[in-house]
Image 1 (cartoon, rainbow, N blue to C red):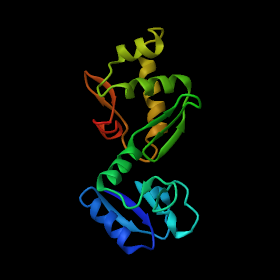
Image 2 (cartoon, one colour; image 1 turned 180 degrees about the horizontal axis):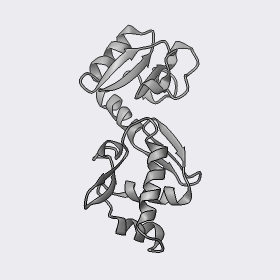
Image 3 (cartoon, rainbow, N blue to C red; image 1 turned 60 degrees about the horizontal axis):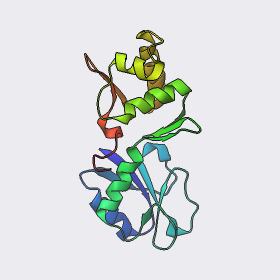
Image 4 (cartoon, rainbow, N blue to C red; image 1 turned 90 degrees about the horizontal axis):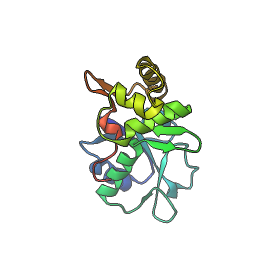
Length: 180
């Protein structure tokens, strides 16, 4: 079960978040002293007047923020889902996926972009054709998959999956929601 850290002095707000995420995630009230990385998502009540912790998503009744209070349960859940979906930056060749941010080489970026392009497995032949234009052998695919796994799976969560006789794909939980 996922863990959500909530930084707020408002007991009602914490209870509302806890009830909204029941069965989906475990909420923990925190003072902000905990490591942000120990949570799958950290929500910060920006109306407290404290400085926003790095990596926390903000909630507010008055200020510009990630989650406007009062909120619908669906808004909170979609915020949680968005946090999991990968974000690729073509200019800087970086990826943010789960709790990991990584700088990629051009080939790593192309390979990851291909794997994220569709909800399916890509064979080594397809990868060679799309990324290397058939100017390499199949062994290079294994090498670059290994490089990506080292960068993307640093927190232990499996991002790239392999299926015998199918190829490589991205774990469904990192593909975002079907209705996006």
